[in-house]
Picture 1 (cartoon, helix red, strand yellow):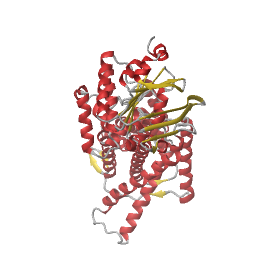
Picture 2 (tube, one colour):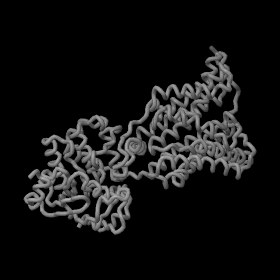
Picture 3 (cartoon, chains in turn cyan, yellow):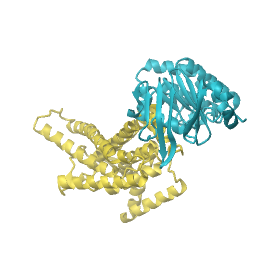
Picture 4 (cartoon, each protein chain N blue to C red):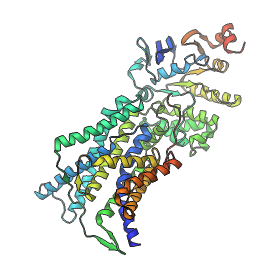
Length: 237
Length: 311
């Protein structure tokens, strides 16, 4: 088991956002969490990357380590968990190259960094053409590529992806997901949260359904795609 | 003309102090969205550290304990004083961050402002308590005859002060633009929240920012002590406020902006005092600043930043 989440509960200003959810991700998997806006998907990822305080009773382990004993920056630099946040959150004032270099900030293996940068440019060749450009001037698709690229350079055992399809035209979205599949084949485990349930379930091998802070369903992607409730609620009937 | 040029020379010197101090305000404001109201007093502490380090070095070399080459003794003492005091004062700045501000990260802005004012008062009064009320006179590290160039009086002090200030500002500019640490500072200025997701510790960058600002404040304190050799525990209050205003005019987080605005403030002050009663100096200087801020509310060159305050 790579990631194990048990009884994860989070509140914002005393309003419960997650009511104690439990799930697991195996090494090498692509797992998705689908759900409506406000169901708690982003909150789940933020809790795993330690960007949010969790409530008592929550247990989370990554690779056998107690996740809760690591601060956010060490989750990335020591455990190898990267997080592509909602809205991408690039540093618009830095260039494409600087964004990637910053992602490698805590790494001490210059050769490995170089190799990973090359890998990013191999997957997203358009980024290479824009290397000296400020990230704020990139198109939406290019920004998503850079956000994923940054995550790949920072850590690559587990990648947490928050709505990678958001704001992308269908064709571009497909190519981003294809790139992500390639990244997964090279050994990075992926946990993705998506509102676009159809896209996510075709991409992932397994999925969970999150509803108002509770996990209500789980299963293999084919099962969830065929599930009448999922169909009615998330796949447009 | 000579009178005018004389004022320019004087203004460059005065502007150097404002610029060096303004950089500390601006960097902390840029990187941490925080006004470090204790910074004027950190400048004062830097001046005192400089006083003790330079007096100590001079005393050691006078008794022969420290053998410095004759002829350049004072120059060497100045350089050593700058280096040692900047290092020591950066520790002071980091302690201010660690003890005063870190526990308040995420707290309402006003808490940090109050803390800053309190730390300032603590630094002033503990200086008073430890060292007594008598003023200290800073050793004259840059003696030398006044040079007359086309009717303008230039002292070696003025040249060294302006040159060292410009050099330090240029060094900081290179650091912020060219190193990975500077890059992390710029990233944090843009989007503070998301920086840990890059594997970068916010605490480390916060310490670095306070350390750099305080080192520059120490340099300003030493140069100030060389120019106006009387130190007192409250020397950083009004001076700090003025540098703070220069930082705002320069634009949040901008090294170039804080430098330019520091010099601008120096020019306004010196020229007002040259042509009008000097009691009008601050009134007119701040009125001009207010007019500038009316037309450029974000200052000259503020770093852009993301409007998203949480992840």
